[in-house]
Length: 183
Image 1 (cartoon, rainbow, N blue to C red):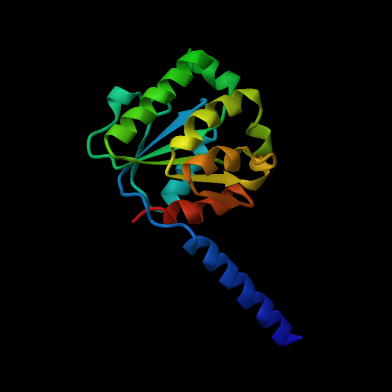
Image 2: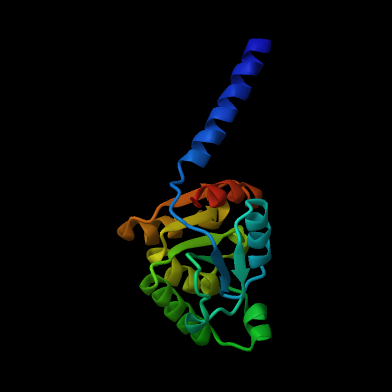
């Protein structure tokens, strides 16, 4: 019985380590964090970055022209919220245009782009999918809570561009691959 338990624990540890090691360190510090779609999920991503001790500057409305000098990585917390868009006073079209310009500028600056979707199934739908479609294919890495990818949309969008998609069981598990992505 003890041997079986010890084996199960060792196996679980090995799987957890292998999952964290599966992420190649592609990103450099410091990072810039923004929300595309204006969902409150950005607050959860801030917690993950703080725990990972990744220095970052956050602004839900970063614009292409306001990317801070010296930033090496753009982290996108993607998820649509009509309430968030309304509070910010912007339309879906305005947010889409902001996202396109921001992503284009980040690429021009040689920044790595990490898209994170922690809202799960509850933060999916037509509105969120609009923003997800803008971000995933131009990213260097995507981290998604599994139940937010039940339909495989993230995989479908990432595959043509060869973007790795890391799926995690829950929000707190997103911290390990996010931390591992940084050199």
